[in-house]
Length: 391
Image (cartoon, rainbow, N blue to C red; front, side, top):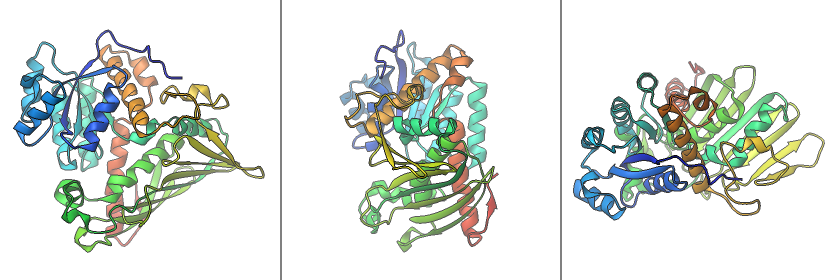
């Protein structure tokens, strides 16, 4: 069960870049970070429009002089403030992540960044080096990894319940962008604009989520991959709105990934199925409290969150916040991840490497993997789906 007595002497003083008025992602970050009292929002640069951002911050309860016009102004002022921010969340379009993250790390701030953290692996690795130099922690917001049943799946694989992993099927294939909605929806327009989104659309926006779950649950490392991608809405070219990827992992396992925004009629269809030599497990984000466990020759079982038969030491990273039978979801998963971010930031501040190394959360290495996946998929697709080495 969730330990609500976990507190710091003072919550981590926290700021935000982006995520202003009417931003679903911004609200998600604020809801998750502040739910357990481990973070306190004290500053922000919420909007490209400075007056609108200031008005929004004041309405959130911030002092007007700590609602800034941009991130540069905020970092410069907060480093001089007696009670300046210690961490920042970055909820801006993709093209800005690298420069803002780098500036935050150079200001010796811990960072939570939306993915992709950068456009290139070289940039992401540079951020990793700066973070290590300045004793900062980077968290990347792969929000689905905070579900307790994802943690249960990871523990089952590690304990050998399904035997050696042979096959991993990943997908995140929704249908919400099956038409050219970017003509009227600004939030979609930037996602299909290469200068802002990067070299991919649906692979980076959706496909990296189940790919992150694959690495988190199985620990498998990709050796090479083959990708074909399509722009069914032709105006999105060269960015894809559908892609299929085949992967070969070290040790002999294989995998597939289907990422799509044109799967008409589908809500999310984010699923991951892990096939072992003895059994298979499957998790679906639309039914996050359940994990299917299918042992060859036995009836299929549906494991439920919050039950005593689960591995109790598996829920330390993603604790149950309410008893079994009640629905937990997206906000709880995000709150679990932010809870772990807070513990990591605090451990780094105290230079407690033992605690820091014991925490499991989507950090800079997960961010690097997501960026590399996009790079390699583009490389393969441009070579007519040729197999390319992952590293």
